[in-house]
Amino acid sequence: MARTGPKKKWGQNFLSDPNIARKIVAAAGEFSGPVFEIGPGKGALTALLLASGRPYVGIEIDPALAAQLRERYGHLSHFRLLEADFLDLDLTALAGEYPGPATVVGNIPYNITSPILFRLFDHADLLDQAVLMMQKEVAERLRAPVGTKAYGLLAINSQLFAEVEYRFTVPPHLFFPAPKVSSAVLRLRFRKGVPEQFSDFALFRKILRHCFQHRRKMLRKSLSMLFSATLLSTLSADLTRRPEQLTIPEWQQLSESIHRQLAKEAAQ
Image 1: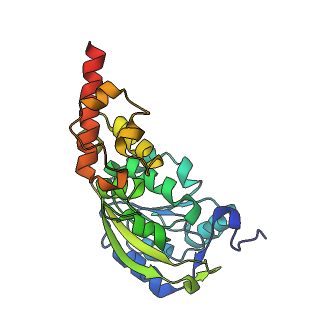
Image 2: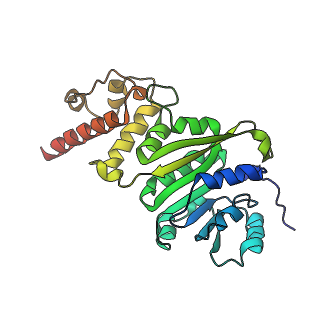
């Protein structure tokens, strides 16, 4: 029989407390569309999610655990399991198979939390909400206020694409194996049409990523690596500030100003 214990390569820590499982599912409220579970594992949340009666899709990378889940729930008409890596999944195609915006639920591995979150942000228009358990430190970064050390790419993207609700903390001893840090459950209620609010959303992300890679530098210094001194001289923003000092609207205004100047230079 295939081994189904926790596998370090996939960052598996199985939730062992049924009360916490009920609280996680309750945090999502009623589902208006399908529910996608990232890494159902041993099924701590699965039966509770299936009880909603909504179409359910589990995405499980571990073949042994996937086989167990199919054996347990495969007889249910609204149960579907994809043996896949969530980061490789065509989320647009999957969501297109079901009516209504999807709810995403999962106890996501610490080592790939950021890539999973950015995948969800990139598909926010297809999603209603996400209820996710992650490392507490990362959860706090998602809702970090401007001007703090934790304020960065995750905070800006999370707060741009969603309303972030910190629901509760989960101590290490409620998992097997017990991680070395506490976890937290967040609810993200996604906003629609975010990229359309920008003249060039790719440029916005490029500026944001670059400046936070050089977060100790003033904006004038970091932006000079991307744009000419002539272009920077046309900007009204205070470029003596550092990245963590700008609010999300200020980042958007800066990106729009740079976009307009680039367009003028291209037209000349």
